[in-house]
Length: 178
Image (cartoon, rainbow, N blue to C red; front, side, top):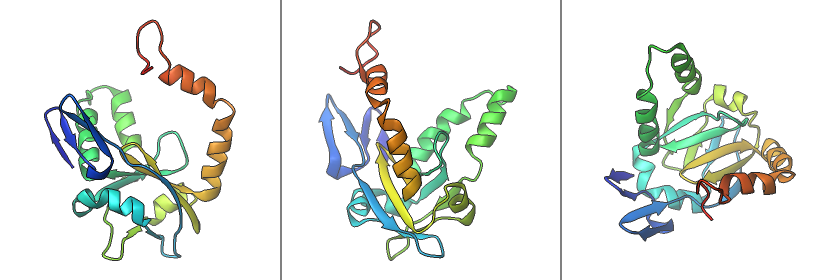
């Protein structure tokens, strides 16, 4: 991925340009299987979207709000770390956040066969067994145990309309995107 000024060129196949800003996102939710060693074959459609960044590697970490893993392309991780590094380390809460946010972080690569090895400690954290869901989340990929993913989607269905209105709806301050 390349970040240059206001132009982002991350994934060529799913992007659009508006006023010299190229916005990109990953698309898709896929079911796949992990083998007994914790290797996950990336779905072909997702691998194609990630092709421009495969050679740079990825960072795999525990999600903050859900029992899943987050796969960051290296450039996305570096951008996030710039924000984290700007925190004042002389404040205890910042140090506590950094420690917990980076707990279990691993650098990973996709092997020549298109497989991603999920380290054992992260497999345990996300309760990943054989059946896995790999889901795009704008610029990162979430990796879920299939049952946990379905439960999270079911739990969110009840209040999704309210959440969508709160997050995406227009309000007096103009924060929404509508």
